[in-house]
Image 1 (tube, rainbow, N blue to C red):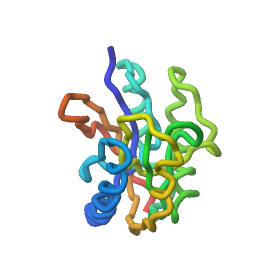
Image 2 (spheres, rainbow, N blue to C red; image 1 turned 90 degrees about the vertical axis):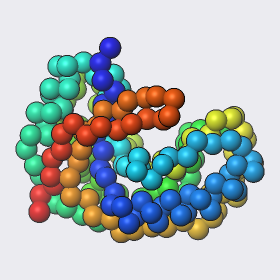
Image 3 (cartoon, one colour; image 1 turned 30 degrees about the horizontal axis):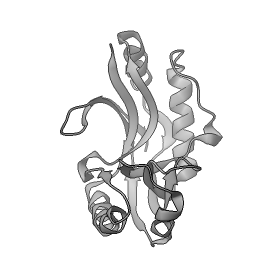
Length: 189
């Protein structure tokens, strides 16, 4: 069994604090309708590529892909709007949308996907890549109608500078996941 790996863009601490304040407002409204597990501020990130359980060969390809800077310029992102995944049926995830920086995130995603060229993972269609920040995962199945008013709550944060991407190992435990940084690559200044 390999390591659970993913590549992410990190947001700065100030924006994590803004989002944590928003999440605390949302928490009481959501938990009046269903139980949820909330993402702790220090674990907030924007997943660009998820590899799942990666063997040593795939990990080495990922590390090699991050050995050189990413040929995309640094950029700012801002967050706005709430939504749920999946798009139909019982919601499982509450997310905060990206307002500014979506196109740049898609370009970074595409550059990484091309570099890694992981045979062990289906290549994603860049147009279907939906950048978002996960706020909570619902523990219980509930109807979309029961949570509909949550998505109407004004939500915004940012901007945050994205200047690098990081390869993380996700270690699962009863206390929640721990994300260990393994490698990083800067974006072009």
